[in-house]
Length: 261
Image (cartoon, rainbow, N blue to C red):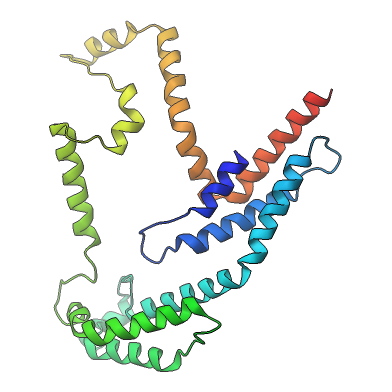
């Protein structure tokens, strides 16, 4: 399981806004190393974990400067988002009392972005990620700045199309379910546990459910839990890496003690 956690850290990726898989993966690897260092020293059969700690530490040391550059670039990206006032925040009562209801216009946003570009000068030889972000921002801002600012002048026009894409995604998944052309993740996770009932009343439904034996229910419930275990492991790993690794190390220590006796 610890090797799976390390492999997942190396291959982290995501399309979420302002979520950088490489940076998250490095931070996850740092938490894994921190958890491995808390392995009890008096436990036997720890040679495997000692070797794994050395490999993780070597990777962290090798990519430390790249990770710091990527972290600085990510912070710069968040500063650009702040210039665009994205994601949009609800307008307070004090801002509503201001002229135009506290709303921004395209000229104000353009000025903020231009000021940020003028004061951001990364060294291309030392800070590759920051330099790449700076070059891409200057290029696309020069080409598409006017198209990006319509949402500040047209009432009701959103700053992004995420809600529209989410609607299209739901419609596409629904179409796939009813057509059978391609399975979805929901059916992959829970399809083996789906049961169809037809009942005229709640009492009739309860009677049908009670016809299923407890033994059969437990068998299928264990199959569902086994199918869900990998997804739950990665979810816990991504949300709280250190606690997850500590739990794995604790289980390994108990097993090692048991086998040594």
